Length: 63
Length: 137
Image 1 (tube, each protein chain N blue to C red):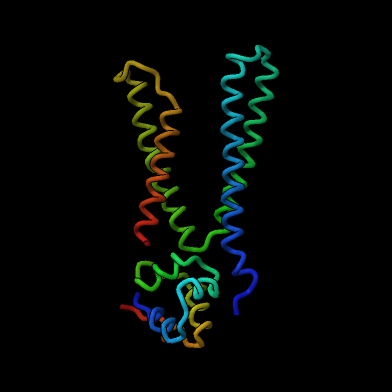
Image 2: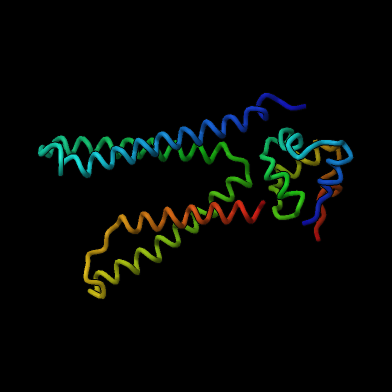
C-alpha cells in the first residue's frame, strides 16, 4: 500500500518524532509507514487521516 | 495537539520494560535458589517446596509483566514481538520434539535436558526481535 505520509508531514514541517507523538506511536513506526514497509491497522489509518484532515483514501492508496 | 498521554508513551514503555526486567531477574534468581538450594544449602523438602512455589509465583508475576509490556507497545512494536514469539515457539516445538525423539530412540547417548531447549527458544526469540527491528528499520 502506498501513502502520502512523508509529503503531508513535510508540508507541515513536522519531524517524524513530532508526527509519532501526535499519533501515539514510536518514531520507528512512522518511519516504517513512510517507507511503505508496514501497512497500518484500520484504526491507525483513520487516526492519520483525521490528523491531516483528509479522507483515508487521500492518504493511503492501494498499489 | 500533543496530549500528555502521547508524551508519556515512551516513558511508560521504558517503565514497563524495566518492570519486566525486574520480574524476569527475580524469577531467574528464584529458579536458581530452588535448584541449587537443596544441593548446597538445605535438605528439607518443605523448604524446597516453598522455594518452588515462590518460583512459580514470581513466574506468574513475570507473565503479567510481559503482558503489560506488550500492551504498552504500539502496533508495529507489538507485531515485531509477536512475530518473534511465534518464531521462537515454532523453533521450540520442532527442535524440542526432534531432540526428545533423539533421546527416546537412543540416537544420542545422553538424556535430553530441557535447559538446552529453553536456551534455544531464548536465542530464537532474540534473533526474531533483531530480525524484526532490522526489517522495519
